[in-house]
Amino acid sequence: MTTLGTMKDRIASDLERALEDTTWSTRSWGDEIASAIQDAIKINGSKPFWFLQEPTAADLTSTTTAGNSYVAEYAGLLRLDSLRITIAGDKQQLYQISQEEMSIRHDGSTSTGEPFEYARWAGRVRLYPTPGSAYTLTWSGIFADTTLSLDADSNGWTTHGELLIRSTAKLFLLRDYIKSYDDVPAAMAAMADAEKALYREHVQRMSKTRMAKRV
Image (cartoon, rainbow, N blue to C red; front, side, top):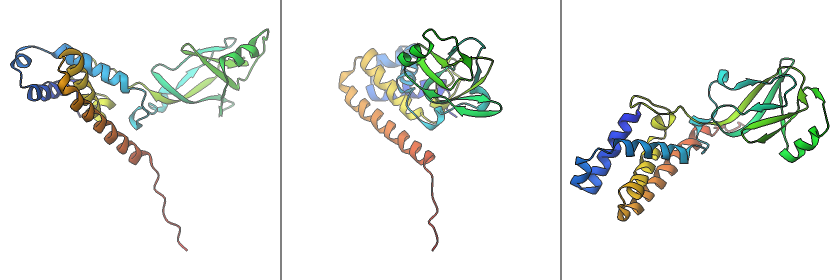
């Protein structure tokens, strides 16, 4: 399993060989490399790769408050695919409407009960009708991976997306820090190749193989 520290060392080694510049070897670039890695994760973070799709089931739920139509979006949510509410033990799909429609629903209304609609706005969802009691919400979608802070840290990006993150980080370093613009086109091509490879793996992991029907 690749860690943040391993990725930093690999990037430094890659660039040292590519640039053949003694000033690269004599300067400590640890902070710049770490920043480039974080930027690379941020720019790729909302892409729907399999390792970002839903944390464990225990981490997918939050609870409404009786009399409050607003609920904070689940921490780390990047893309919401579905939102379900548990009523009498059954998970029921909530239907998304626009914020404008939701405002009209609540305009002058004090209705409470079992919500069946939601709208997203400013990091929150609003439910209609307003929950009459506490209900469990189940969130499904794309979630930000664990933050990398220490050199020993690892997450899905260092394990599965290492090549894409490393290639993207090297592009940022060459373009924004080192200003080695002649090397930027090759770095962009390497990043594109890494992204294509990760998408191919994603498709293979997500596709369903069907057995041919016997006649």
